[in-house]
Length: 341
Image (cartoon, rainbow, N blue to C red):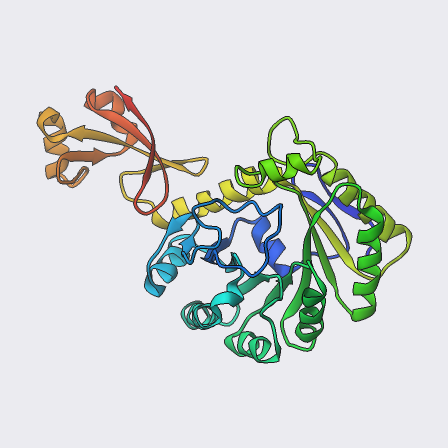
């Protein structure tokens, strides 16, 4: 294993190799499937919104979906090379989770990468076998209790890669190193340390426990420093394990924007222009359409919807009427701005 710490403050730091799920995530080529909000644990730092936490809802890339077909369509439209299945705890709905894994593998091939997050509370030998048989590539276990450690030992006997993924708790360098030493003895290859994130749901809980919030409101002060201390100690002690620190900034800005850019490419309509993951086009209401717009429509250069004509942004100087629409490339499009011309 290499002993050079790689990365920077924007993408994070790591020692050794990265799990494949992280490598694909760096490219923005992974779809996020929030398969349920149900969970048997109650972590005080859980950042999941109140609309999802402990509720059995299904989202793909922030879009609520109703069935398996919607899941596959969203993955295809995002030009994804893999998915990360999260929650809640996906093992709370094991049958649904394994069905999704099997279906994605059938649709996109064996090389399509699937990783999954769990606290391990529901992971027994039977569940591990079901995930293995479904084609899971990577299991990420959040260690919160002895139950999680028991699950980890079960998971290490399977074909999929096993990653331990925990938030970096400020001031807990020593206890984290002791955990990593135990993980090395068990044969774990990868540890991910996430910057402790702040959300509307966990803000008060963090404050009441004495944590300080960063000026940008994204993370807890000291989490990053603790993670870097841990990585340096792993290097100093020559522990045979890869450790990766993932900052909140990366998740909020780089990862999300790259994923949007891929989805924009995968779902681009003929009259749309793509700019930094946002799509835009020119819209002219039917009653306001002049002869020029109507002629473009007759030449198939304009797409007519129920109440408007939609065409390329580059024609804005010639059309001279209507408005420029800027939107997130979701289905349906999520309008961000409407700019009159």
